[in-house]
Length: 140
Figure 1: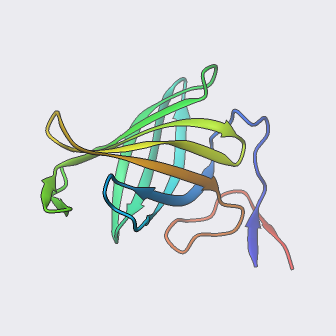
Figure 2 (figure 1 turned 90 degrees about the vertical axis):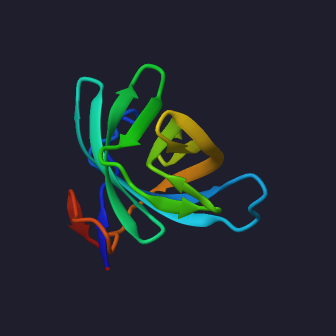
């Protein structure tokens, strides 16, 4: 199995892969998501999201002192979310510790929020099938 070293200190997001779930009001089924942070410079952060079979490029900010991460899709998407067409997704999260981000996903149509969904992401320590590896170590 190919696994990765978790970067220290805990405030560092780069490089990192995350997996988790989100649920929207009235939706008892959790949907799976994955996130890959690929670059951060000052507070500017770049990565990708894998949601419901779609890979999306995201950019935003990570405030180290506050442990707050805000990312939004770069391109307009047109996806059906519970009967409404969302054009972009925003992730608002707080780094609870080195292994956990909690927050919300905002599914939007332009500047209008269609759904605000709770989410939880866990840092992946083994390779995802969707993202390229970063800082690998071999573990048996």
